Length: 195
Ligand SMILES: Cc1cc2nc3c(=O)[nH]c(=O)nc-3n(C[C@H](O)[C@H](O)[C@H](O)COP(=O)(O)O)c2cc1C
Image 1 (cartoon, protein in one colour):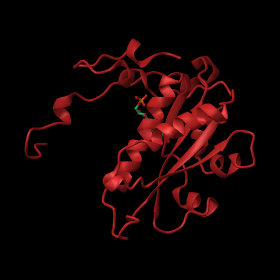
Image 2 (cartoon, rainbow, N blue to C red):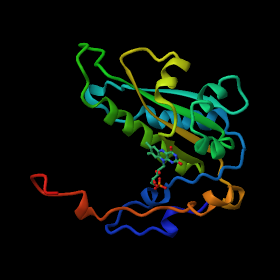
Image 3 (cartoon, helix red, strand yellow):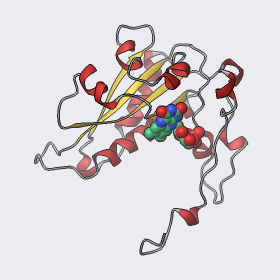
Image 4 (spheres, rainbow, N blue to C red):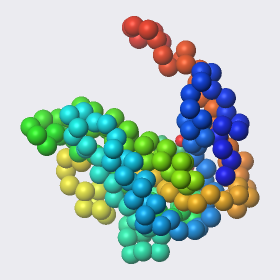
C-alpha cells in the first residue's frame, strides 16, 4: 500500500502517521483476524468525549458471515463495487442524549468522529485499509439494524487488507491516490470567524 507520506507534504512538522493514513479503495479480499479487529475497536473505545459519555456505538459485520448483508446491502452501488473485497464493515452510531441526565448531548457526533478517526489511525498503524463512507441509506440503516430513536446514524467504514490499485475497475484506479488538503489559512483564524 502506498504510504501517504510518500506523496503528501505537511507545511508544519506533524507525525508521519497523519500523512500516511489515507483512504484507498483497493482491498485484497483477505480476512482480518478477530484479534486485529478488536485492536481497531479498542482504539476507538479510548477516544475522548464530553463528560466521558462515550456516545459512539459500532455495529460491524465481517465478510462471509450472516451479518455481512445487513451492512453491505445499505451501501450505494459505487461503494459496493469496492467494499465487496473488504474484510469488515462498521456502522458508527451515536447516542444523542447524555445517559447521566437525559439532556441533549451537543457533541455526540463530534465525539463519535473522534472514535472513528482513532480506529482509522490504529488501522493504518496495523497495515489495514480503513475507508470512511457516507454513501449508504441512512434511513434503511435504522430499520435494518434495529437502531432505536435517540441514536444518530453517523457513517460507515470499510476495513480491509491492501491490494494493488490495478485490482480496481479503471475509473476507480484513476482516483486511487492520497489527496491533498486546504492550506491552514483557509481553515484557521485567530479570534472571530473571518471567512
Ligand atoms: C465520513 C466520511 C464519509 C466518506 N464517504 C465516502 C464514500 O461514501 N465513498 C467513498 O468512496 N469515499 C468516502 N469517503 C472518503 C473521503 O472521500 C476521503 O476520506 C477524503 O477524500 C480524504 O482523502 P483521504 O482519506 O485519502 O486522506 C468518506 C470519508 C469520510 C471521513
